Each structure stands twice: as structure tokens, then as C-alpha cells.
Amino acid sequence: MTGATLLVCESSNRWTVALRWGLGSDPARLTVTHDWNDCWMRLEDAPASFLALELNEVNLESSVGRLQDVARKFPQARASVMCDRSLAACQWVMREAGAVHVAVSARDIAALIRLAQRHFEAVRQPEVGYRQGVWDRLPWQHVQTKRITRQDQSTEHQP
Picture 1 (cartoon, helix red, strand yellow):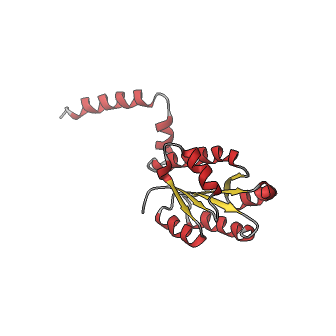
Picture 2: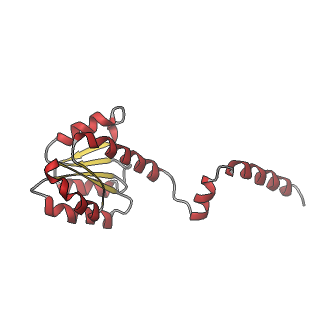
Picture 3: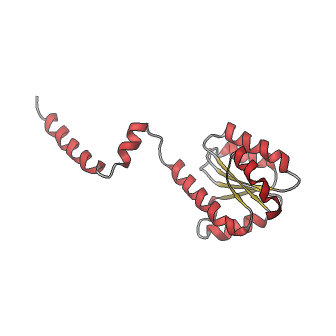
């Protein structure tokens, strides 16, 4: 399994160009596929990826099922949709199917990239329990850890 990637599945390169421009110094995370089977294989290799799926008139119906399949098979992955303004009315169906964002123009790519970067940060962190997660986010956590460590060290030397 490879690391999480921004996985683009589109028939043209229109969105890929905008994504490359938006990623700037981090284009290495970008993986481009032009058919769904290749995209699915890439998801199997990197199941925590962020998928950017192109929506058009041809794949409109199948995209709903694909988004649901991604959510079911790859729970760590997140999916977004990119489409022309003419399909903007379909965004609520896509969101219901599992898309975390719908981009209807190249201007929306910045939001998609921010979501992908937040996703990469979240999957990079090791999974911890609920109590440990809350403890790690406490602002005074580092002070408590030092105090506990000092107490533990003083009790270790006692017979």
C-alpha cells in the first residue's frame, strides 16, 4: 500500500491542469487516471486517498454508485466531484452519495485542495482512543505530562 494521494479520475485534463496549478510545490501527491477501473485499482493501493471524480453527462448516473462504493469499500478515503456549471444542480445528489465537495469551476479547486490537504493531515496521524485524543488536544497537556513523569521517576527509585 502506498501513501494517500489526490486521485483524479477524469476523461479530459481540464481539472488536472487546475489542480497542478493549485498544488504549486506539492504536485507529487497528484495521481491522474482516465477510467474508473484504473482509478479503483489506485484506490486499492492507497485506500486513504482523496478522490476527485469528474462528473459529466455520460457518467452522471454511474457516479452516484461509484461514490457510494468508495465510501463503503474505502472508509478512510474521501471523494469530491468536479463538473461544469451546467451540472451544478446535481451537486446535492452527489453530496448525498458521499461527495465532500463539488467544484463547478476552476475557482472551486482551491477549496478542493484545502479539503484534500486537511484529509492528508488527518490520515497521517496515528489512530488513538477517544480519551487519548482528547488528552492530546488539551492546552495544558504538556505540563501535566512533565509533572507525571517527575512523579514516576521519584517512585521508581524507591524499593
